[in-house]
Length: 235
Image 1 (cartoon, rainbow, N blue to C red):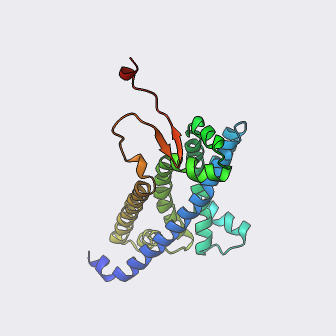
Image 2: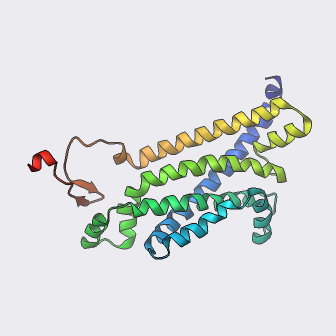
Image 3: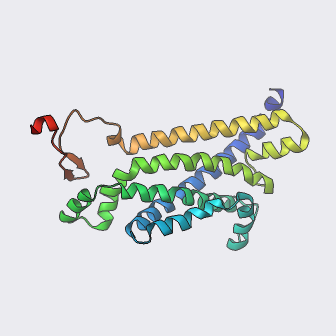
């Protein structure tokens, strides 16, 4: 506790840097992975091949990526941009499969109804597909969030300031309290961002948490889908 109290300001700075890098990479991942998942799902014949091709990127070890990507893009190896780019690539590799599966789960009859009502592809995406796929995408995003918070710490090995700096500095100087502090802060930050992700899903897709009192038409952004009649009522 003494070490933490003596270094509170530095620790707070590292937490802020870690948070900024994590959130930036997560947002970029979502902005890229969701459209990619949607596009991949539209190409049924090559869907699985495209998903597998993108997903294999995640198998590449993170440390080499922190060196190779800056060399390809031209950004400084020790810059925040390099970290965000690398983490975004991993995030897209993880989330695009979930996004593709989420869009594939949207009932075709709902899409057909929207088409019959004159909805354009753009309107169907925003008013039908994304709202119905949202809860599944949020579930996948939670994995990306925790994974990203964890991977940010790897950047400390090449000199990127974050909570991971507590690990490298603590190991080099033999300060166990510093290492433990870094471990606990990483866990707390991951749990906090995961909770915020759940809250965001709860706010953005409120119909997923609402239980309907009984059978009736399902209305999504102006498109009505009749539910099957109850068996007892049918008799």
